[in-house]
Length: 256
Image (cartoon, rainbow, N blue to C red; front, side):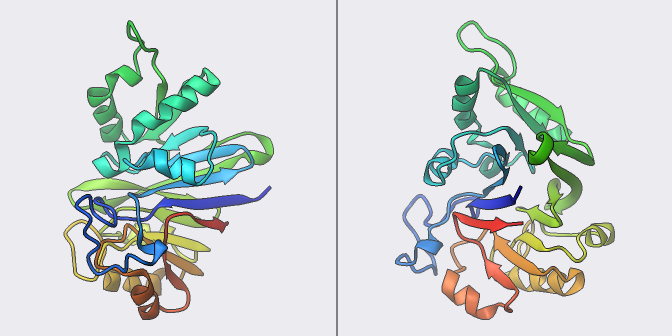
């Protein structure tokens, strides 16, 4: 059975255009420049595993005709990765079953502090989510729909971000530094989906130059740039890239 990765959102924390309508350097006539906040879906048959719940999740799920979510993986606790969590409620109502979410300890603590009502039954609403602490290696799904994941911690400014490796591919939405051990784990991938916020250096995200340097070191077959800011026009960026590196766009679906 085939495994797919769908880029649900490919934009930075404010999306493109921003809430004030500003497109920056992006050509608004190109649909690939219209970017919602980062999240992704790993799917195999009916096993739909969501990576992060961006604030744009409802729109992303409707647009991509995703009718069910089986579990959710979180990369870190920032708002642009977590604040669409309420949109998971419909899948609890649909299946009458708590949805398993997987995250590191700081992210789980953040959820329990700020969204306690999702994890404990209240007088009006039942708990809809079940927390699971991430392991280094784990599998989700059953039989022919099983997908195996490996996790590594990478730096995202002052916090850790969880990178997910599956089907000889890696998804890293937010990152500004990879250790030597990280680079070793990411060698010779089929697909390398990586944070590339802008052209200029940033304290918590990779720049284009930094990403291209990493690509030369780890030599993936294909690299896809995500978390793209308003200064990265799709067509202009595409022309600057080597043939094995492409910008992401919302709705991009890859067979792994």
